[in-house]
Image 1 (cartoon, one colour):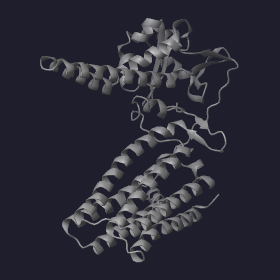
Image 2 (tube, rainbow, N blue to C red):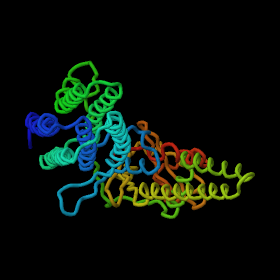
Image 3 (spheres, rainbow, N blue to C red):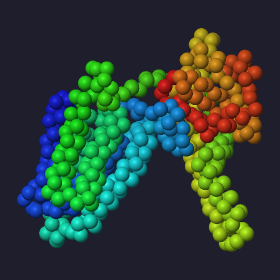
Image 4 (cartoon, helix red, strand yellow):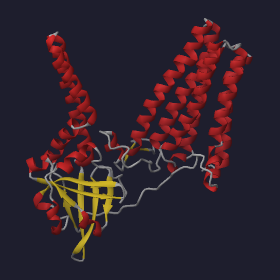
Length: 431
């Protein structure tokens, strides 16, 4: 295991090699400004992909706001505690890492396309210059060198075991910071060219800003330490919570499972009640109905589009609800004849959360429309800004909540409406 200073020196060596590629191209190979910006643009994409790979195998606990990932599908992934082991490599993929990776790739891809369009395309169109055949060949080699440097960085991260102690947000945040620095250089440099600034000045500006952005990334750990030691909040101090250890056994526990058919039906409701599904479907339907006065074909197409949207969100809702609850079982433990704790256990991914014995008295019984249809009940508990939800349990087995809570049985309006807000905002493993 490398020490922080050794990791820093290794990262400096890699970044110096990566930054030397465009510098050699400018000084020795007579690269144009367009060629330099093209290499930096490709490096941005490689940096984003490398960070996504690092985050994919990070084993630290992700940091999410309780209400931040109650969205369809994303919330189901963010709230699931567990890993997918790779068959050959000694690595595993943490399911809860996926939402942050997908969001970062989506945002980063938009920024990457914007930087390329303005920083590279805009400069090429303004100057009216392209790359010669010889220049294109050398730039291609430079691109390969930049990609190789990022591959080495990811390999060092995995082989050195760094992934075992960092949350997924750390490499993603670092990549976005680097993209912001280099991307700003591309945008501002492109703006300088469009404004008529001389190319040598723009070249120097881009090189300096890129180097400064990489230096900040290398010494981020020292900035984090300074941020933690002082009262001045620079935003560098990391938030690295740890997973709570949960031990559970089937021996001596009553096992309660949700009714599978009710879970699937609840997923249909979950998908159709998604705010985005309601807005898009209702909008297409309304436009289709209004257009019937002019062109019937357009109305049919729009109404067909609304049906397709409803079907798509139905499928997403079924996946969301099934992934959350279909493999769940709730282990109700008894301690010397008295009520014990409750452990939510996923048969695919292991223990997810636990509730202390005293929390059982606060469980609220609700009945959604799905519950009334299938003769089931749903238990809810709001605690620590999270909602613990045990959905669609057979009514004759819902003794997990004390009998004195029977008066809390509702008509399902509050339970059903929570499907669009915070169905399972409890992050797996927290109690």
